[in-house]
Length: 395
Figure 1 (spheres, rainbow, N blue to C red):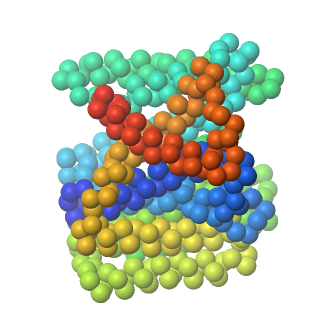
Figure 2 (cartoon, rainbow, N blue to C red; figure 1 turned 45 degrees about the vertical axis):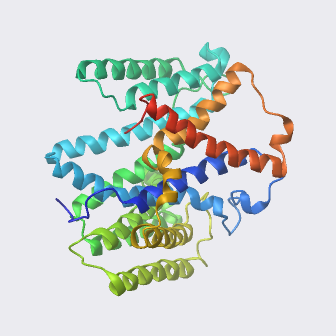
Figure 3 (tube, rainbow, N blue to C red; figure 1 turned 135 degrees about the vertical axis):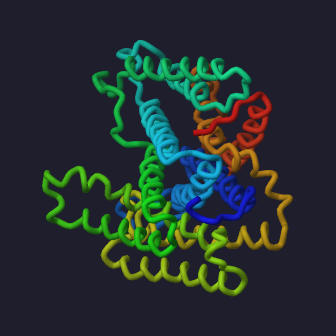
């Protein structure tokens, strides 16, 4: 064991994850609605501001960080060796990369060059992904591996036949990694740091500063030269890793029994941590504007501070005051984040393939926003139904 963490499900983390996924579905849907206010849109890359929409992705990164200590220590408690643990981390990372790359390219299929309807290609990808990452309960393991093998073979075939771009010459590639791919990079780096420094809170805080410093270094003029291209390409991943590590550190503050932070000590530590994040963000803002698009240090630090505050409120309500019945509504998303995340895309491509369209009024203003809110809630109920059918994804 690396840290002496509290055992059992942490309802406040599950609720935070569920709320974040629900809001993520909403903001992804509402992005296609015309006439929505600016505070419901991502800030542009050339602006020095952010909206609540720009906090959703970092909130998920933050939750990934909060979950890593529990996941790593759980596998160690079950008897995993060092190399078995690394294999598990590598499998999850590769899974996130693969899903991210396929999801990004699903939007740019050249049907003539691929020889397949773009929506059909996307749906086949999602079917294969479900086959690979579904949680099976067969007593005979060979049946499980047969399903997974079919899914893997399907992904390989879809990847080989894919052609994208206007001229149909582009192959399946990470021209950008997609949300899941970016999470994969940050998850990998955070897991390495967590193990390397044995879960020491002070070391994790130091690595947050190192990640921010790495981003700043990559933005210096002398780093724009060609020989530094690979290093500078990791600047955004370093910034995202800082957010993941911020979530990891908060988990240690709240749930590491060896730290012994309770009552006023816990409040003081968390308050000081939040203040430190905000002060660092303010100090860096003159040099680095607030921008999600560019993953700037100010954006990372402000979003981390917001996540600390939101989780602390949830922890107080759910774990301290035991006001937890309302969290059952978010449980499907909280316990099945991957399925909940990809489900809206599956619905979208199914509608595209079958020619089903929504009334024009649902793509405009208030009616569109209400529809997106209803759609997000509908996805939670659909996930719950799919769980009953034995479909539950886990990387």
